Length: 83
Length: 151
Image (spheres, chains in turn yellow, blue):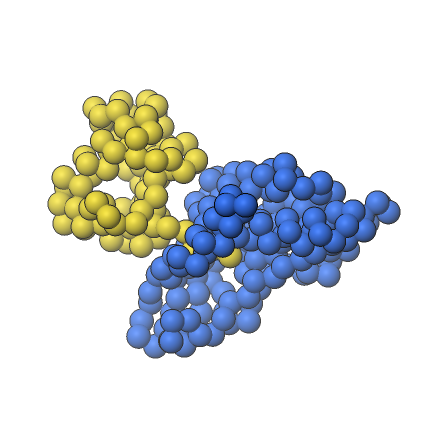
């Protein structure tokens, strides 16, 4: 499937990328996280088990077992700190 | 209902006046304004920059106002959140809730702020004497939001 993946705040800075388009053959948010972790470096560090990050699919926060629809807009970001 | 994400400052008095304009059924308006502080985690903060996720932010704010409307009988709600670079003392966020009686207005205003702190995709980066740093989420904010589901 094809995904548009966005990164925000500290993760955008650590990864050095704000947005990318991915060809991806997994099914769930967890599969995508594993795929990104495999890049190593900051990706492996920031997305390691136990690290606090959030995943949104089509602009709704989801849990890692969520299924990704084709052409989804997926965002990965740190816990929010507005207000 | 009015939900805005903007760089510009807002005027609390004008926003509250706009809610009551042309109607006489409102008995209470509770409002909250969050300000940028000059001190956090023991360091002076010279300025902060607020980043957000355009599109999702507006959607998340609308969703939490919908949840407030489902819990209480509200007559109007205004939420304004600023983004971009802010200085100490600058207003960051405004929540104002109108209802017939004060109890609902107070409760819904606090509920919306508690949920906004944990659900709306905003991030703060502070400028301190030690350099720039991203603000870390607080466990106390999660606890504040959880109160509304525990009861």
